[in-house]
Length: 139
Image 1: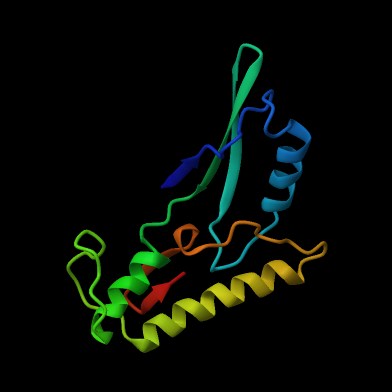
Image 2: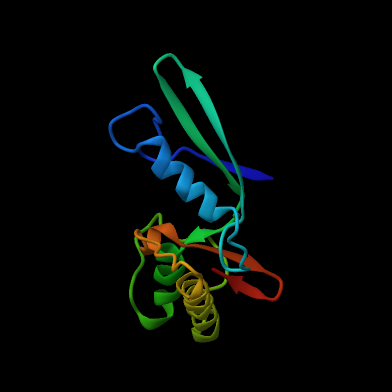
């Protein structure tokens, strides 16, 4: 299964981002392979008149945002989550939260050690997805 993402400013002929910048980003992404980073499969361009829309084809991650994961984990510390923030299920403990945070750190170290160095540029909890497997969570 894959996810198709249409980045903001994905209009190749538009004012926000040009084709050379997007092509460079895709060129870098196609060499990134790490267990804590979403896998980039490819890109598609839909030509529509004078503008073209770019879509990225990525690994489908079935999980929740880091925000939701941590908020649900805060329940055992007496912090009430918002009504719609948590699914029914076990509350992640300190070990699970630490595993997720270490995974994020490993991914960042991998990106920063690349040559040239890759900087995420928009790292925030809502951009980090946490999947839960039989052996524990993964970010």
